[in-house]
Amino acid sequence: MSAMKEKWARGESTVGGWCTIGSSFSAEVMGRAGFDFVCVDNQHGVNDYASTVPMLQAIDLGGSTPIVRVPWNEPGIIGKMLDAGAMGIVVPMVNSVAEAKAAVRACRYAPDGARSFGPARASMRTEGYFDGANEAIACVPMIETVQAVAALDDILGVPGIDAVYVGPADLSVTMGLPPGNNDDDPGFVDALRTVVDACERHGVVAGIHSTPSLVRTRLDMGFRMVVATSDVVAMRAGLAQAMAALSGGDGPAGDALY
Image (cartoon, rainbow, N blue to C red; front, side, top):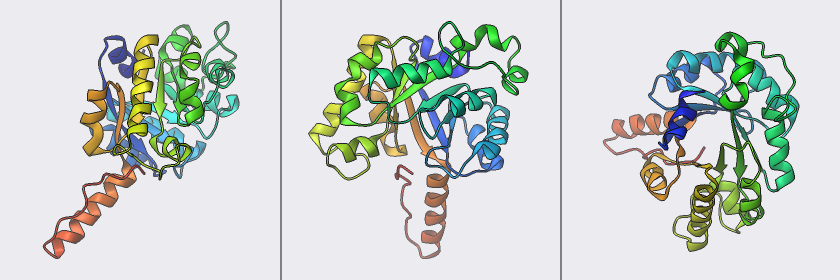
């Protein structure tokens, strides 16, 4: 079991980083930053399989649990990322029980799922990989639409889901709000509370994409898988602060989502 899932099993919270840039060097920097987990984004990040493999190696080297957000709920790419050594899979736009079951099947070997065996790098990463893989791998469907929130209790009833992960930008868009964190909107906050409450009822970890200034708020709300920042957001903020310092001002705090 990964260090991330061990923390979840103890009822603890985890804070992570997000890799949008397709670079093993930036992934190692993120892995060494002290995060519990680091996610390589293959949906919206500028990554592909060829760049992801060395990034997973670099995150391992840095000491964080490596996970991957896949482009879509498709078993081939999910299995390929797991074979490359990802210890968790974040699956976008899971809106129904059928889609949640498909995500679990792709993450688990039989009899719990339908993942094909061939852990090319994963078997080198973990001795006796096959015997513990179904328990070790985190299956994390994304809850990022009003439809998913409405079906949440049914989705969380699917065996094999370890956590769900809120995408606040897409959730906001489906609520008729601008993409982002809309904590000034009661409906948005109620949706987040609905996710946390449902996760607590079902014994599933509640996760969310966040920003540095919102991490404490999200943890206090009950989220236990919180992404604090991404490589590109941190880089932009650092560069803006450096440029502002040249003119005697202050740069932004780096609170963008992506």
